Image 1 (cartoon, rainbow, N blue to C red):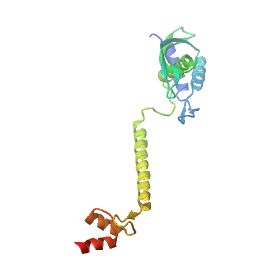
Image 2 (cartoon, helix red, strand yellow):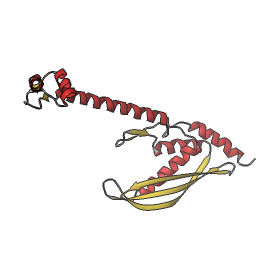
Image 3 (cartoon, helix red, strand yellow):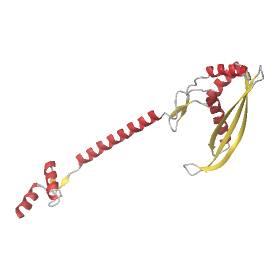
Length: 206
């Protein structure tokens, strides 16, 4: 059977690279991630241990200028990579493929894109887990719902606080109405806040 030797070795590589810790931290968005350095170190160690060589063949798929949120122009590059794994003992080979994009104002866009492409080509092909899932909808939705509930609760507290701080003023004489019941009664009967004295005067006139 073709490629049986390298397949057995790749099983060992996958077992040795089954999980990589997220040691990187994006300080801007505050999330952790598995760095390209950690991925390459672990994969390279497993490949060399099993006597498998790797050759990366990159190709620029696209390169365009874009405007970032600050209004500055940056280069956005997309790179396709082919990683050829060669068994040094049998000569058998297997190809891995990846795609990555990188954006930078200087000359690092290509390097960023290439690094991302290589990183994810290994991670997807070797089924490397990092302990998270970008499509974990249940947790995302739960956080979203909880966030909305918390936001509504805060707004409700603010509204109650504002109502408590507000003072009802008689529409006729301008005096402060300290009784909520008086305000509610006058609003229901006269469609405006009136103090007891003004309500009595209206009743006498009527």
